[in-house]
Amino acid sequence: MYFSLFFNNFQSFTLLRTPMQLKGARRGECPKPLASMNTSCVNNCTQDNECPKNKKCCDTGNGQKCVYAVRPGFCPSSDLPHDAGASQKPICPSDFDCPINTKCCPRGSTQDCLPLLKEKPGRCPDVCDPKSEQQCSGDVDCPGDLKCCPGCGQKCMVPIKVMHAFPSN
Image 1 (spheres, rainbow, N blue to C red):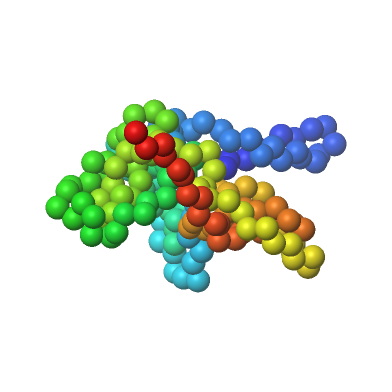
Image 2: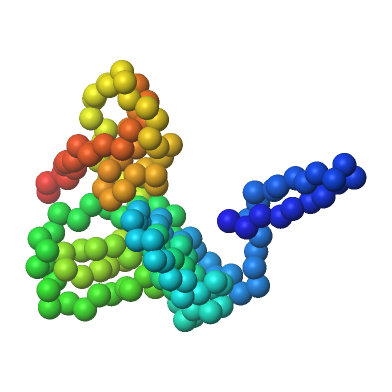
């Protein structure tokens, strides 16, 4: 996020929180930074144009680094065992190696282009904690597979798997 300052005649300023398009900015979003306790962060870049063509300069929680950009949305859950596809090479290293409306998702021990979901898979448990504070406003605010669930506040919770029944022929 970049900020602009505008001064008026009263010698005060207004801070606008609008993203500004920088020259050389690349498509896609930065992945959500990981929480880090490391106090010796190193910045390897300051702008996208300092990174290889298929990467963006993003805050990783340990400084600015060149990483693969991501498309908004989530991967479907992968119920494949970790060694499934062990002999296969990844089909995609990043979301932008996949067709539109798909993401590069883990599938066993490889990665494949799969249809993206607007929210994380599964459903929220029917739980209400009256002391719960709002932790999230959407699935994107929750780490890993946790979903942002309503019920006496918004809270990141382990979702309940939803089984899909397919008609048999």
